[in-house]
Amino acid sequence: MPQEYIASLIGLIATTQIHIAKGLQRFGIEGYSSKTSDSDGAKKKKRRLYVFSLILNNGAFLWVLIANMFAPPAAYTSMFGFGLIVLMFFSERYLGEPVGKTRHVGALILAAGTFFLGWAEGTASSNSGGMVMASINVRLVFCIVGAFFVIALPALAMVKKYRASSGILGTIAGLITGVSGACDPLFKSIAQHYRGTSGLLPSTGIGWALFACSIGFGTIAMVLTQVAFAWKAKATVIVPVHNMALILFPPFLLEITLSDYHLTLFHLPGIILITVGMLFLFVSKR
Image (cartoon, rainbow, N blue to C red):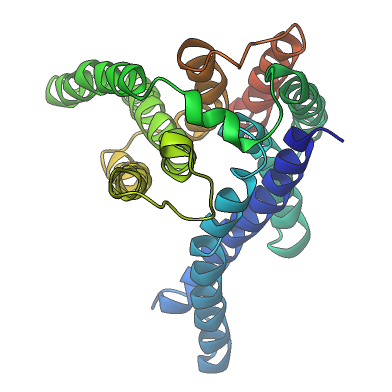
């Protein structure tokens, strides 16, 4: 079995854990609301679930460190569409949220896209294993990521200043949070394999600096998502755009910056199906 498939399997576990944690957060936060009619005992139970959900969510970063030992981070992030399916069925089964036929169709399309993208990652690297990341062009990564933020952040500020539609606001915010979320595992992987080293944690000073950058990107993704919601950006726009950017940015970036990584014909149907599946899940009427 190619090591990329092991990383993808770890990605499946991680995205399942993260999205179940999100479902529990949505349910548990009610324990802190004075507007609910729950008894004190029920509220305490929900508060405990909320604390557990935070631990579950924040503990998921360990999975990416393990996955990066086996393959470039695109193998890990390619599975994150599956977590949306888990969240949908978890919300339907345990939180009592109705899910229509359109979303079930979207889930099937998304699952097919995830399969194609995961399969593609098994053939994308010329050399199997996480150590292939040691040859990545770090300067070019910084140039591309830096150029994106130089363009995207002022665009977001301008859209907010001139009160553009919530759809445009949500699209730009989703792109920024998605790319930020993708840079988290990407920079962790670079840090773990910097200058030919390989370990669960960085072993060089620059590696630790890159590791700190990854945490910063993860923080940006989390904080900006909440800010965008406070600005009345539509969740039905932010969520699919965020997830598409999170899944699709790593393979395209690696294609440019990593000589041993190449997009394949299997990536194309995966990208198309994931995009269509997410639109079915989040743009359809609730």
